[in-house]
Length: 238
Image (cartoon, rainbow, N blue to C red; front, side, top):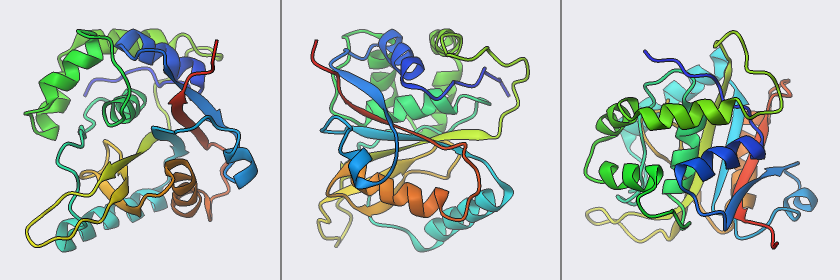
């Protein structure tokens, strides 16, 4: 398995990656400094996606594996078939995976013929595994990832081992399966280590809803301080 240098979790790195990949800078990533209402109110709206960096633990992995098995056995609400999800097959590529998931599933503008615009277009008729292989065989993304990783505020680590991982939350309309009702907008978690996209329930305000999920699913019961949340939203006015 290929191994990349882990991405540092800060807006400068994510925005450097996004710009090189082709995101028009009308949308930018910014820090979410806390999950209470007062701090969430500081984040520029409308939020298009929320990216979370969290520590990997044995208990957390067991819980997520159990949830994947339950979904595969019992199903979940039908998801919008246009959601783009990619299986992660490159070690430490979760930062790039989270960014692709965030941008590809948001109504943001990409530079025509940019690396990300072309990659998304090529992914449309492929399975998640085929998309992963496409990412593996597109050297430009490895270059973009490496350049962004070296642009962080801390030195590039000599060891590539890490116990931190990125996941992403986006809003998407519910899918319409046989005999199913329209459930309106849903909040969907996209994590390349999981078995597929996960419906997390009704979405009325993406940032507020993601904050509640992050608190409940990831932070409650954890003693770690290695959590970082960033939001993709409108860029500041010049």
